Amino acid sequence: MKLAGRVAIITGAGRGMGEAIVRKLAADGAAVVVSDIDEANAGSVAISLRDSGAKAISVRADVSNEADAIALADAAVAEFGTLDILVNNAGISTTKLFLETSKADMERIIGVNLIGAFLCSQAAVRIMLPKKYGRIVNIASLSGQRGGIGRTAYGTSKAGLELMTKVMSVELAAFGITVNNVAPGAIATQMAIEQHDKATRDAYHYLIPQRRYGLPEEIASAVAYLASEEASHVCGHTMNVDGGFQTAGLMFKRDGVIAPETPAG
Image (cartoon, rainbow, N blue to C red; front, side):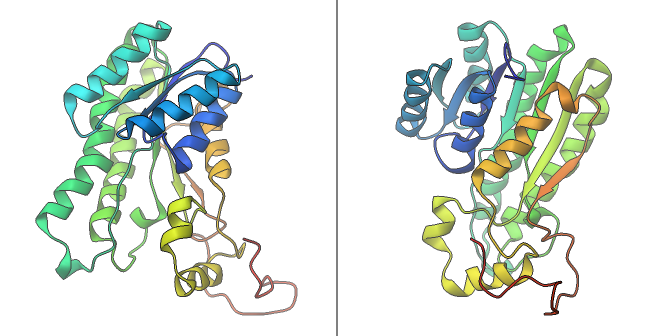
């Protein structure tokens, strides 16, 4: 129960990685605010958490709307008395080639993935500053570190999030507020299961040294570490949770070095 007594907001927590994160933080003792633009999904997750004995409420929020971001932080204080942890997980994506990406695509995706994290963080930091304590964990992406086909809007938003995290960390560290990133690679969410065809899965299995997709729970464990006292001296860091995807260079089959063709997941 390393987060006992802490209060956490997790955005985009109605399903997928966000749901895994909110369940992990609650299991570690935090009171949680389950936030999502899909009110029904957020409410369902919060109810199941309360049924299991956790302290949880749900709040519908469009993170790209400043009023919603402020109301979200205020809801945590109104219900639980304070706010200690913010996980900026809410994100949207598209896969379009550079010349096919519209101005509207860029504005919509950057509005949620980057500006949304900015707005929610500002609202949270205003609560954290007076008590000189806080943990902010941003969910970045490998797509923000490497040039992937079709990732003009999404990759740009996540690259911007990594840099914003560094600036926030430098400005806030002296006030007891740490800001870090978790950067997932290919993760076996329901969305990935539905949208990734065999060619896509085979490409990931070849490029990832572990020869498998990551699990949402593996992202959640990394977030829980960065949100805890165990990471009190970690500031402005991006923790890749990607099975070695970012690290890998040339890979070829060699006994004892490259994993079998059949992936683990």
